[in-house]
Amino acid sequence: MDLLKELKNHKNHNINKKKIFLGYPINLDFDYSEIYNLFEVNLNLLGNPFDEGARYKYERGLIEYFGNLYQISRSKIWGYTTSGGSEGNMYGLYVARERLKDPLLFFSRDTHYSIEKAADMLKIPFKVIESQSNGEINYASLEKSIKRNSKEGLIINLNVGSTMKGAIDNPGKIQEILQNSRIKNYYIHADAAFFGGYLPFLDKALTERVGGVVDSLAISGHKFFGTPFPCGIFLAKSRNIRTSNFKEYTKSHDVTLLGSRSGHSAILLWYLINKKGTKILEDEAKNCIDKAKYLVSGLRRIKYPVWRNDASNIVYFRKPVREVLDKWILAVDGNIAHVVTMQHVTQQMLDKFIEDISKTSV
Image 1 (tube, rainbow, N blue to C red):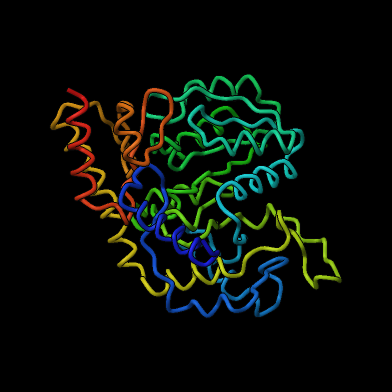
Image 2: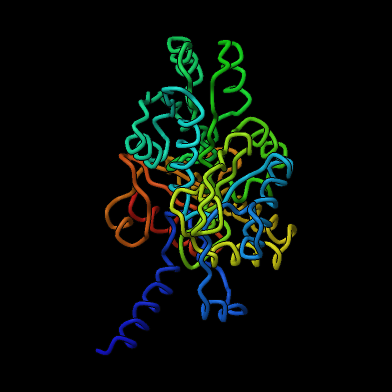
């Protein structure tokens, strides 16, 4: 088999996977055919997007666009396009570490593994806080831990959509705990890799509360928006960023985590949000939630244990039998599994999934 034929088969294999891809928050329904010619050129970004230069035009526009969604003013917003949510999480913790002196990090047990991985790499000590049954952080446990460590600089990770259960930690409650505990030296980072993309088009009030509380947040581009490769957006309030390391070689302040980054990521996301516009993105977000509600109703109808958090298109349920796990691409953690009702997930797919659950759970 020659290479071109092999690659074509690989492409077709992944296209066919869309019919059974239920368990992960990746939007497989995208079309960038209008701008394929952009891949005929190298679009390498290096440096601070807010330095002068036409190369940063789309990236800077993207940061300002998301800053506006989260009600962070242009004079206060900073950020850049990343390789994905994990890079955004690492950079957020790095910024926090540099701002605080010997900080201690708190995150819930339901937090994505990238937070602990980043803390290990950055040598930031951390404490895991127990979660509530729905995946939300246990606020009483968090408050006790904060009061026991009130003399230290504290980093709080705020989950805006936990990995398996889609729980959103309450930004107001966390801020209230910090204020009541008289903590002044703290930094709040939001892991909003998935929900951070669609929440502004679903719940503007909650989006503004998140934006008002956090010092930084990480959003994935390939999840809600959909791109052919992983990418993301890191947002921060500019007071937290040091930009004094000008490099003559690059003619810029290299203040990002990786240095060179993909200019294609910024252009694809900028193209998508401008082509679709707010109304279509709102409709897509609401449709994802409606499909999640449909799945919950279907599983409850057959009396199968199932749960869903508010503002979440992650539906989690008792782990099904191996036959179902082998047929559908599901995410599993312990005794639960979940379905994420993304744009490419159809009602027909959900009906077949419910039928399979019904046949194997008797």
